[in-house]
Length: 177
Picture 1 (spheres, one colour):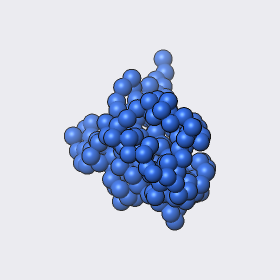
Picture 2 (spheres, one colour):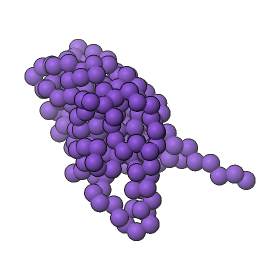
Picture 3 (cartoon, one colour):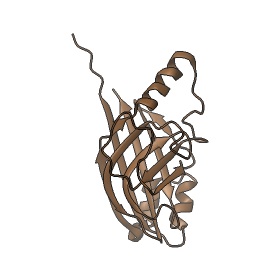
């Protein structure tokens, strides 16, 4: 009998025309995406789903230390969790400790996130009209607003170039089964 664990990551990105930050402000307060998409259907420019990522050694070690001795500081909770995006294109490598690009932006997760359910944790952050306006080629989940914090994962794939007046929402769902 063999033991196998499956680690899965699903990232969803939603792009809105939102020069007044109306959509961004509602989402940051924890409003559901389904409700926002229904109400602002004409502002939704694109939605995309991406699979896969690399769990970083520092993130995996953080989880093991948390299990072993409760050393979970700072925790990946609503107060500390951030999703970072950047323009780096270096291939994913487990030994990395954050984003590799020149332009980077770490955004605190929306109210009510992360959410744990059914063997997964979901992080969501909303980047408003004036935030992270550059090419998005990479992303990570961290327990603070920068590379110096613990990063759980890193994914490299072009999501496009965010421009002034748009709100982009990124959801990162990590699961182990």
